[in-house]
Image 1 (spheres, protein in one colour):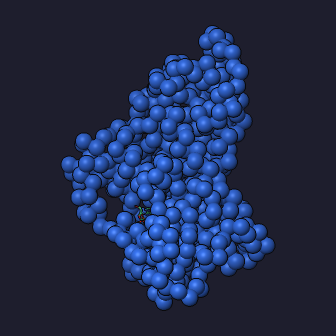
Image 2: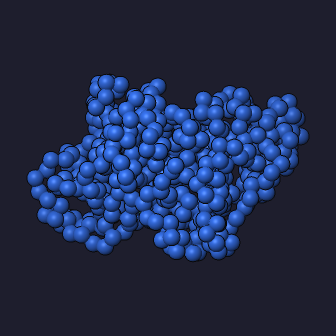
Image 3: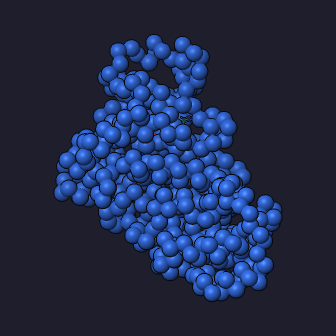
Length: 451
Ligand SMILES: Nc1ncnc2c1ncn2[C@@H]1O[C@H](COP(=O)(O)OP(=O)(O)OP(=O)(O)O)[C@@H](O)[C@H]1O
């Protein structure tokens, strides 16, 4: 039995008459069944209460406690990690109230755990976003603690100050005035590989940072990726994030249905769940649709567990082989075969589109025939895909076909992905159903299908 928390579905539906269902689907947060046991043997129902409030509290509960609260996490490691990250102003325990320092403006967002308002600093007139979180839930304290822990990275929403009141926390954050990535995606549809890779690299940099800092975000989705005025991404909403020690696993069921990794639905899991979710997002950026769809939560979860992705036909014919290779190594159900965030950042597709050094490398255009011969010799999973699936149909790629071809050869030598490809997303003949916003909002049943 899975419950949905947050805004009710009818409200969500009415809000998105012009936008893909993708938006609705990913906003739903699901939580663990009441009787699920945490890895440490604690009955979560007993530990967290029952009913809706109890369930809300269950969301996010997992075996890894916050840093410093567990013998599983070495305190030395935490201390070392925290130095340089926490500004004094973001620590709780200050005497003055938020109204002394800021003037509140309009609401700019509402989430499952609180509201977000604009606030203007009385001292310097700068606008910030203030997220107010009601106290009382473990997740709230954790969110504050994790934001403090991560703040300082250029792609994490900067936490400027924390004000604690008897019943709530006010988190004063950098204002991301460029809106949310999801809204941009809904408006613009498919992204070029160049554009997707640059956004995606920034996302993976910040996910990798989280993992290095011992944090699993657990809710990577475009709704939680905000944009600065300059259009740069900022990862937000650490409401479901958890601390995790090296080698430790989590077991609480939490996330957003369309993006959740299969192992979250069945067993214990690690920070690799963020790689899966990021892979789902990459799929959506490049194709304009979500990979796992269904008319109900159960149907979506079934798809996540069973659907074989076809990366060879339809829109994928115009997507480069390196991009598809990267996807296949991220959206693999075998967690041990799934590449890490760090490995994603070193993938040839990312390097090609984002690394100027590689681009300006003196590459004498290789004759097509030589490349094709090399490809034949380096037999890859995609051997049965049309050879011209590497041909560059996007305008920006046309001039770079020689380099992309070189990458095709290079990619077959990427050891991290070679043994994994066959285990996941092996090409099938069943194309992914594409659905666009025009046919998504007519019936209730389309609610969970696509974006
Ligand atoms: N720093 C920010 N700058 C601008 N807008 C923000 C900022 N932080 C949050 N928002 C807005 O507020 C909304 C809700 O914020 P957030 O996702 O952090 O809250 P939540 O309660 O955890 O939400 P959710 O239910 O989506 O998980 C965001 O979708 C975004 O529109």
